[in-house]
Image 1: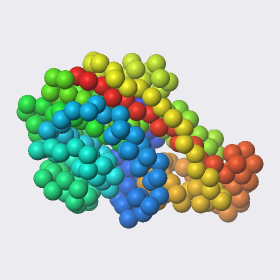
Image 2 (image 1 turned 90 degrees about the horizontal axis):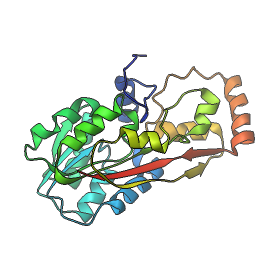
Image 3 (image 1 turned 30 degrees about the vertical axis):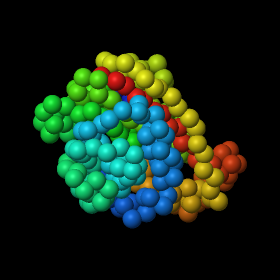
Image 4 (image 1 turned 120 degrees about the vertical axis):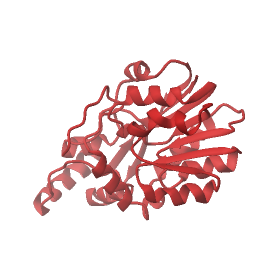
Length: 258
């Protein structure tokens, strides 16, 4: 696995960019059916936005367009820039925002150049369930903030320390996330309007079904050892006994005004 440098744990992932891209490209046809938590996160993120006009919007990590669609239904705009690591996601962005410009690439690499695509700045920079993959979150968040007009809104959702804690306990892999105070320290200058979190759980019939769920949503881009039949059986027994066949999601939401 390629080792990456990072500046803080929002969180620092255990997967390199190429592995993440492969995982999400493979899940494009199954993501919407299985990513129920991410869809609810997109809905809540939209509900947390201040009620105002947003003529120019940038969305980072647009994926299959869950958030893109919600924003298109609720917020008219004249300019929309959609980004994703997987180039094939351009179709989803254009389906919901025909006027969109699509910017392929890694969020850490593209964030510092957003202002080049909108020289007078964006009214809204938004991202759903994406920034947990950032290798240098403080720098990336600062770059997203710098892409805003004065008074513009930066809004994003990510995940907290308890996210997929069962997978971490069973396999020793996962993303690391900061405590709320540490997250505050990573945020760029501005007026913090919202910082909140919640827990959501999904119950599965077996560990194998839980792993299939993660694969279907692309959230399996980790360096875990291969599973033998015997190891899977032992882990499944522990999953049922210690975790009641449940996966925990720990969404977090941040809304900040420049």
